[in-house]
Length: 86
Image (cartoon, rainbow, N blue to C red; front, side, top):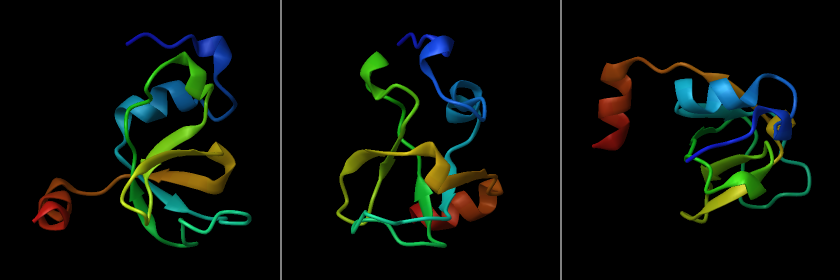
């Protein structure tokens, strides 16, 4: 998959999407399927149409696009990631 950096918004989303796997929701205004202060798993974008939005698995269990300003990327230690997956 190839994404054009110029298509993506601020915060260097292109690099962060492929370096981090989790985000913390800091704003859920207008969205019922995400909760403020909850951690979500980032899903690799489908194609160039994602245009800098963050694709993640929300509370419905499906992956959807959300505005990048609603999240902060976080690093979770491998041991905790393994526990979360179990």
